[in-house]
Structure formats: C-alpha cells, structure tokens
Image 1 (cartoon, helix red, strand yellow):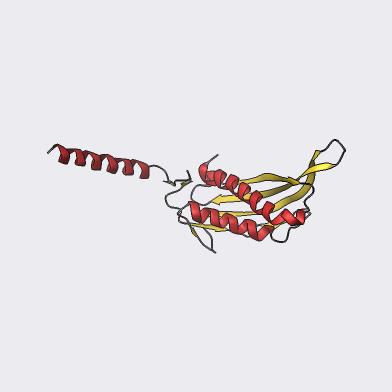
Image 2 (cartoon, rainbow, N blue to C red):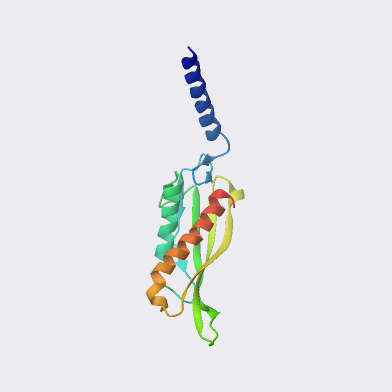
Length: 173
C-alpha cells in the first residue's frame, strides 16, 4: 500500500512539473530559447555581403548557419515564405588587421573581424523586433596567409555571431 501511494506521489509530482514547464508565455527549449507558443515558422532572407572586402563564401555560409542553428535549437520549421519570425540583414564589414607587434616591429598576430547588421521581425510579438549590428573576431598568426585560414575563420566567427543573434532573438540577452 505504501508503494502504491509512493508511485502515485511520484506520478503526480512529474505531471505537475511537466504542466508547470509547459505553461507560461512561450515555448522554452533546452537551449533557453523562448518562442511565442503560436509561432510555428521562421524565415531567413539571404544575408548579402555589402562590405568593402567580399569573401566569396561568407554570405552563403552565414545564411545557412543561421538557418541550421534555429532548426537545431528550436521547434520552428523553416519556410521560404513569410515566417512568424523573420531574419534579414547584411554583412557590413569584413577586415583583417594587425593586433600584436613584436619587439622587432613586425606583426605577430592578425585579427579577422566580421560585422553583420541583422533585422529580426517577430510577427507574433512586435516588441521583440530589432535591428542591430553584431561584431566578432578571431586572431590568427601573422605568418599564415589569410587565404590559408579564411574558411576556418569564417566558420568560427560566423558561429560566434550567430550565437549572439540567437541569444538576442530567442534568449533575450
């Protein structure tokens, strides 16, 4: 009899926990993403590169990585039409510059910096809309030619930028 009461208590506790976690103003994922409960679809416009230096793969890599992040970390479905949540924007800066000089006045480290301007439209809650610039960088040894590390750097910096965009749009950081 004690075991039956114990099992009922556990089931009641688990049921209450699930109910509490699913109640509230939106869907919460394991990543901390908060999404309006009536939002089902998202869309991403192609992120054009308008920077003075154009890396040929940057726009497509960035656009696809943004879509993949949202697909993998939310329950939203990608649409080619108008989504409940929509991302658009452009790459506004792409530059490399020296950041560390050695005692013999030669450069020891270079920095690749990418800046994007992203507009987020939440058609379910317009108070969440934003247009904001996001910047991130990654340092690489000056003895390496940018072209030899560019693909890796674009992937790394894009991942960091997309995490910042995701947090702004879904985690409210």
